[in-house]
Image (cartoon, rainbow, N blue to C red; front, side, top):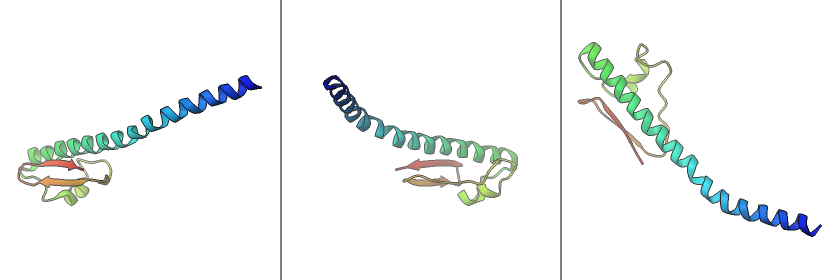
Length: 94
């Protein structure tokens, strides 16, 4: 019985060590997803420019670019999305 209690205590200590280290992974993954989406949108803007000779007017214009995006554009994240219509570059910053 005492061995079982010792094992449970050791597992409790391991969980107490592991949980704080794992909590940052989700936030890091979300940030990297937002950065990847910004790179994808920049590529879409450059593709539109190559086809039409002009960049989309704003980020909302990407939703009507059905030939370039398969799904509606959803900009999530706890940061700020910016779009430069003169260069076609989309950025995300926290």
